[in-house]
Image 1 (tube, rainbow, N blue to C red):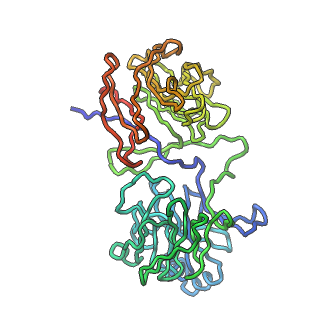
Image 2 (cartoon, rainbow, N blue to C red):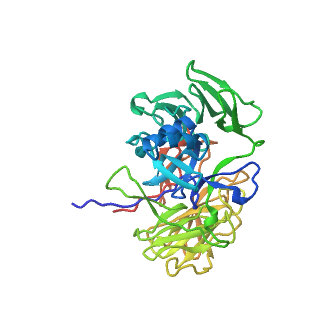
Image 3 (cartoon, rainbow, N blue to C red):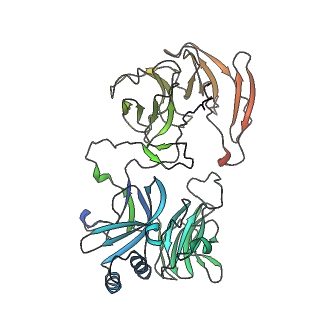
Length: 465
């Protein structure tokens, strides 16, 4: 029997549609032209650290780019500079690279760690690299050995140190719950950590295993950049940035659309393809031939099908449209129009007819819900004649959300009846239920765990095969 295969669409954390790259400038900048481009402009590049002179000499000698005497002179005079950074140029995964900039001609050369050390020494779970002053050790923030517990802004990474000559044997975890390491000396690492609601910068001494908080608890301080063993620059609301990564917006002309492309990402399974495109709320048509989604600004609806990738509906501003879903029988796309995830605001469900018939036509969506309630997340029955959705109508002052059935999926209200009323038991995480519409019997299928990583919501029923 042939194996039945399908596709799953999902979205993760925000990724800028225009690639990031790394720059620096004087403080204060004299002009836009004073900005220096430190990487080569290929792929997404970010989270860099300067490479100390001694370490830079070792790296250049390994690459055999010039005679040893020339290397030392150029590094000491600042004619050659280097940084280590994260790039997505290899299989669209986050891996560590080194960039060398030659001041004489402004040329930038980028090398993978395999180019330098003969193998890929670091896992895809390593970020924020920092090279020790001697060039013999590297510190990284890493997800190694830990599960995701729902962190979004505070990633709770651990810091590992490894020797570059034999990293697999010398790799060691030295700091729990720390990020953005920066060497102040061969035995001193600065890093940041969130304690309570406040971010702070700390100093860790490798020789005695001691950690000291350096910044006051009165304000946030992050992204340390070591000056020496006792001095460190930090970013706060009081500081100026001197080095940074930013989107390469200069590749666009005023009024241009940001280009969207599907990127193939390396998959952990050879027989499973993984593709990435900038957007949120993906939804497949029932036959799998069309994929619709919303851009990251919640402003436009995009469609990918045999005709290509294009905008099929656009609103006048951001945070105006989200959560598209297909009618199971017709070329109709349902969308929620209004501000997202604000129960006290009016949110209406609209139908966009003939979605895939033409490119970028100013269609007039049909309003299906009325009454100035917060209505969202419709899903049609297999025949495409009616849909279920959630709404704050009858939800009282606390805006509780209940499920309703729209009896006319094409023209909407007033053809509607209430489907079920939830028994609210107070705050907590969601659970997924299954209900028989005819007799209103409700069965709990799965409940959330006790933290965000085990949170379950927005179920979608898999169509029968």
